[in-house]
Image 1 (cartoon, protein in one colour):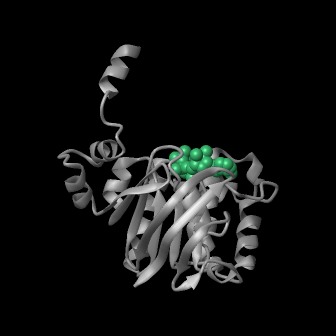
Image 2: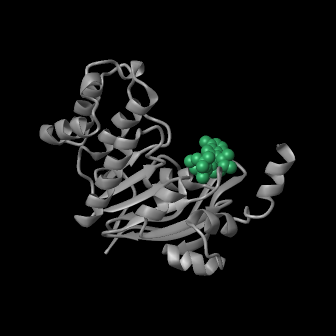
Length: 246
Ligand SMILES: Nc1ncnc2c1ncn2[C@@H]1O[C@H](COP(=O)(O)OP(=O)(O)OP(=O)(O)O)[C@@H](O)[C@H]1O
Ligand SMILES: [Mg+2]
């Protein structure tokens, strides 16, 4: 069953077309990766789904058009934290739980322990390190146990243990019938986690499928990094550029 359907999505910022007729769907039980060079349109696509950016086209979450009703169905980790920095993590989690109308304190405590931030939960968020802020952001997206996780470069700044825990939580989430849409620049992570991948370049999806399907499309034997660079036309000339610099 489709958890997320995106059809003919267009995002404009003034005269710039950031997302150009993008369509894809993410089904129950799937981790779907959005890959693309800087400025390709990944975050713009993601922001439309969580209702932060105006768009043309159709977006449905569990059959409902994006809007107030779909907010509770989504857990969102933005590429830049959107935290109330004068609050402590604990206050922020309480705030998120009350907005989402849930009182699942045990879940919050388990997540605090999982990401090892017990020492920081009573300090103002403004005083925390970047990685700890990212952990707060990740926890706040998971508190209400939404069916759809939308994670924009979620492993940014996370240490090895927390990355592992988040990756395992993503896998556990889809095993329970949820769905995950996430963007990353780390090809090894996409390779190990994604059931399907869309490669987006200059606002358009230029390839979509399993890694095997992308490999065939690119006619490349190597890693996902090789496939990605080939598909996005960035494969040639890397050695020459590095040689010229050094
Ligand atoms: N608020 C904005 N106003 C104007 N242009 C924007 C805005 N946000 C993004 N853009 C432009 O839209 C295009 C897509 O940007 P977007 O942030 O979606 O890319 P991305 O794939 O997430 O890149 P990155 O990998 O660097 O995060 C870029 O050309 C960017 O400059
Ligand atoms: Mg981005």
